[in-house]
Each structure stands twice: as C-alpha cells, then as structure tokens.
Amino acid sequence: DQQVKQNSPSLSVQEGRISILNCDYTNSMFDYFLWYKKYPAEGPTFLISISSIKDKNEDGRFTVFLNKSAKHLSLHIVPSQPGDSAVYFCAASTFGGATNKLIFGTGTLLAVQP
Amino acid sequence: DGGITQSPKYLFRKEGQNVTLSCEQNLNHDAMYWYRQDPGQGLRLIYYSQIVNDFQKGDIAEGYSVSREKKESFPLTVTSAQKNPTAFYLCASSKSGGPNQPQHFGDGTRLSIL
Image (cartoon, each protein chain N blue to C red):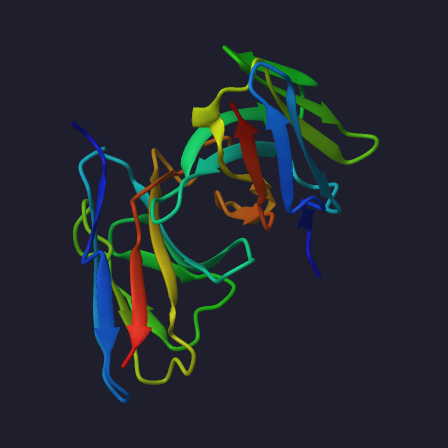
C-alpha cells in the first residue's frame, strides 16, 4: 500500500518555463512534507518542506503548495533551468509514532530542455 | 564542511558473506537512518536511531543489523540472511528524531553480489 504517490514518472519542460511536480498521499495523519532532488549516483538533497498548518512555502525559485482536503502537494520551479534536471522525490512524515520516519514517493524525473 | 560520509561507494559481496557499510556524520545530529533504494522505487527505511545506543527497526529490517555506539557513526551490516541485497544504500541524519526535521543524506553505497 503506497501512502505517497508520484504518478508521473517523468516530466519534460523548456528552460525558463515553470515545472510543476505533483504528489498525492493517502494518510491523513501526515503533518510534514518535503521535496528532495537527486542526481544519479548521489544521495538526495533536501529542497524545501512544508508543515500541515501551512498551504504554501516559498524558497527562491521553489514553491511548495499543500492542499490538505485533496491530500495533494506540488512543487513549482520557476524559472526552470537545465541544472534542475534530476529525479524529484516527495516525502511525508507523521509524528504519531514519535519518530521522524519519512515515507517517500517513487520519484519524478524532470528534464529541462535548453 | 559538515556532512555525511558513506563508504565505500561501491561494494561487492560474495554469497554467504556479511558486509558492513560505513556512515559517519559531523553535523552533530542525534538521529540517523538507513534506507534502501531499488530501481523505480522510493526509499525504504531499514533501521533508524534517535540517540546513541538506541535503534529501531524500519519497514525492511530483515537481514540487516546496525549499531550506534557513537553519535557520529551508524554502520549497517548486510548479513547473509538478506537474500536480495543488491541495491543502493543511503544513510541520512537529522538534528533530532522529532517532528518537522529534514533528513540530510550521504552519497550512498552501491552493493552488488558477485
């Protein structure tokens, strides 16, 4: 049972345009959400997070939106750059078990075309 | 520079052999984690430790063992009981095991069977 889903395995965007990566979750107990970026043969790099008490968080070119009623979050990258080409993972956690246990989606490969 | 160091980058295991993957962090983080990534899948939690001398099983702990004798170190042993050990292994740490704490990752160890 996959609690965090990234239904688009890949996305291609032109340089300078907006990239929108989507993530859905099923567990309403999740209260903290994160996005990670991963290059091949490297570990994931933390990008941005959002707590369930907010619906938007912005950091430079990256904005994460959270729609709790739809159990959906998205990452917007504006403007997209070729260096943004990587696999993006969303992750979610709940403090219900008293641990910072993250549940990851399967990732979306973003290709930004020059 | 503070960070997480995993070694070796590539590791080969013979049938019936135990191997140990190293993970060291100098971020002064209390919590550490081990994940496994298989092709086309998200990261799955093997073991985690919220504090020195304490660790808990994650979702796929069978065939693995860990120790946490020092704050900086969280080695993972892949035992011969792990029947499908070929994967990319990632170590992570967070400031604490509490809520709303992003996890930061090392660059991984790729384990293959000879």
